[in-house]
Image (cartoon, rainbow, N blue to C red; front, top):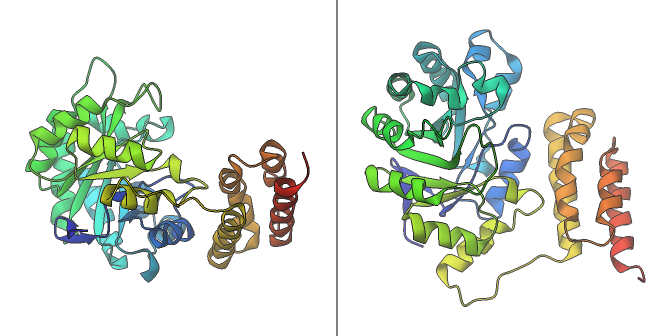
Length: 328
């Protein structure tokens, strides 16, 4: 593939891993990068929490060599506080700093951060400019279509962020009020792409190699960013790369054994980084994705929701294999 970059930061492919709170920790980012993700981003980090010396927030910014190129995503509503957060993030040598102006969650947007920033385009520009000045690496901005159907202003905000120094814009084609329904508006993403000169990343509803190509072709975007569709399916990155190179080639799909082996390695890496107690409880919602399409998936998901130890995980794997190969 041709060389790809965002603001001079090299990117490995056109398929990028979206940041997801409670999901894209170090172990998950390493897994997806190993499967072909072009770039990954940390879970979002609160600039306000960093200003109070939050150890947990500082830990969220740790980056390992196996997940590069990797960005650190920060959120907040104060240009000064966001600039200070970017300075702290730079201690971890991220390849990119990403500003969250798209999170719809009430605890984020309800406090004036995330997508709520889009209600004040001027403030969006001030925050972007402050972070760009403090960072020393390319800065990207994650946006939504707008706050609601009456305030669809992503084109305006994207232009302002570009003028403030942003190196790329990610657009999720839904408003804050729409959350994750109805279907993504790819027309508005295409309009953003036509309105700015910097790279634009299409985000939302991309759950297959075919959908990724259609999104790229229709919007003209430079990259696609995949989030929920990667859960239990990190192979989607390699599938997208293959399909973009030659759509006539058959796509690779893992066997049940491979899916379960990757699931176990994923959780073992979480344990290595966080310890068994924390990791296994967080892994409950991550393991269920690996059972999609398997025989007995509902029962397996029920068991997955109760795992507490690695031995429980290994027993879950054996149960899934038994279910897959048992007589109907």
